[in-house]
Image (cartoon, protein in one colour):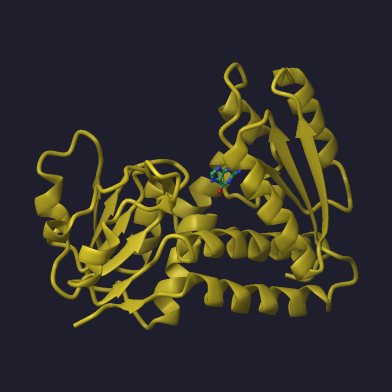
Length: 282
Ligand code: GUN
């Protein structure tokens, strides 16, 4: 039976619409500052998308496009200034930073109440104990998708491919909090295919085109493809061999139009949360 396609674009539009309506009730518009250092073309595309989302949600947004030669000190000064601004609720420093800049120190400098990416160790800690203020955007977006399609991870075997701080680790935590039995696979995992093929819910976040082949997909599995790769032809694609996986899966996310738009929608949701917090409306 053909898989149901999980429509991330449609769900993201619905989430953003809800955010826009809630934001309109606040005394002050939510404000997001987006900081982009250097000229990575993919990062530029992401940042443009985030600015567009802010407009759609009725948010105030500011973009800081800094040259690749920006020093650590200059970047930290900007973060400190944004931390102190009353009209800025969320601060997003687009990753990866150019070589020579210390990502960890920058993320630590963002005030946890403005950390709409949920990357600050304080927020990661809150997430770990199951008491988060913000949802990590990509894994949070995946959880929203599962909820929308009435897919309950409770009691399910969940396999996450990839262990990054941005996706793999927080994804595993959210699935665990939702009572899934979670396995995280990575580059040193022997026989990843066998583990993947045991999954009721398979999430791939590695960034390797063609990684997930049909033999790694259990009949009836839910397949979530988080990756955004470019194939040889320059076309956007995920980790999953979509056509062959879709023949076995019960549900599958496309790339593009799957997880990507949901990541951005969750950023808007987090910025709204931050704005409510700052305006005493939480
Ligand atoms: N680079 C890739 N994904 C993300 C993200 O979710 N947030 C930030 N800040 N940078 C990223």
